[in-house]
Image (cartoon, protein in one colour):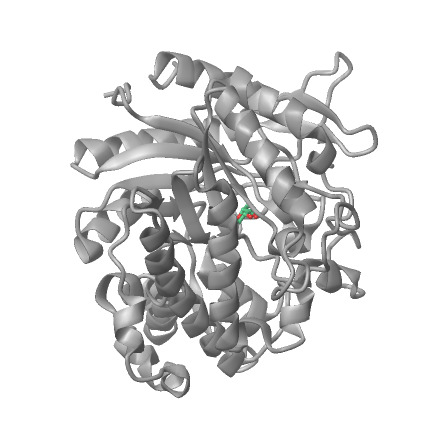
Length: 439
Ligand code: FCB
């Protein structure tokens, strides 16, 4: 089978801090990524999201490019510090108006908005009070969510509370390579529990406000392979990365091997809050992981580099499309039949514009082709896959890698802010038009 079902939803994903720029404009407050990027040595090229794709000013052009691609949905995130600069108290009308215009712009072009409330850019003012390690942040998050829905809820029907809470908690609080840059096991577990708690709280509250809302978690799942090398480390990494954020949603529990470490943060009655039947699950998937025990890591485990000789993307992530099939089947086995959307999939490649101003990115096209084929295979095996969002619309600020890694279907010349659709953009355009994997 090479054709996708008729109703299959094609989309493209971005996130606020990675594309918006304009960090000092429109009344936006400081985010933890502004602060983290300003620290020496944290970002590969010493950059920040200060300018990024200046999407805050170029959003109409960007929406035009989504429309031309033929995508039926756009997944974006609202920046909490743009909407509520201090993370509590006053809301910023200018910020809310920006997203309101964006949503209108999407709808008028026939594109469904899929809104994510937290793609990691927490207001710095809340970090000063402990950020996600503070239980109170979960309540602040609910208030922010209420406001966003009050303003956009008449037009937005799909909401994702958190993008990859696992990455935020593990890389941001345990390993320290993302904001807020902590290397502390307790901070990792505290933030994990509070993110999970806030997911349950906000999901319930938003459903009360708007019963037709479609809500679901988005987690990056990556199979831990070659477990024989270090069984304990593999089980631990799998529990931390793949289970600590979905077991609570589906079962109201945590993986047994992590219970002791999470216990200090759990209050009576939390289990009922954690469990929430989602309308869909959003899978972000890129690669696989190999685990190794490590005394030097606060979490006792390290994610190994891809061994030499294997096919990798420009980020060094192993290209292994069969892992996506495996992941989809494993998810269904553990959590049951839930409508699934691929909410992120894509790869970095060292793209450049050539003499004629074109950008050829054969590695990306091949990567997408192979991963899409794995998705088709999963559907043949009965997985309820409903749609696919490519990461990403534009080259953008790739967190600790700065601008050194390009993930876009569209090339961005950061000097001029010129957008150049890459060959992969045309591949996706054809794919959407024909709803079939092109030859
Ligand atoms: C995911 C993030 C996204 C982007 C891609 C490459 O983990 O959600 O923001 O950085 O990886």
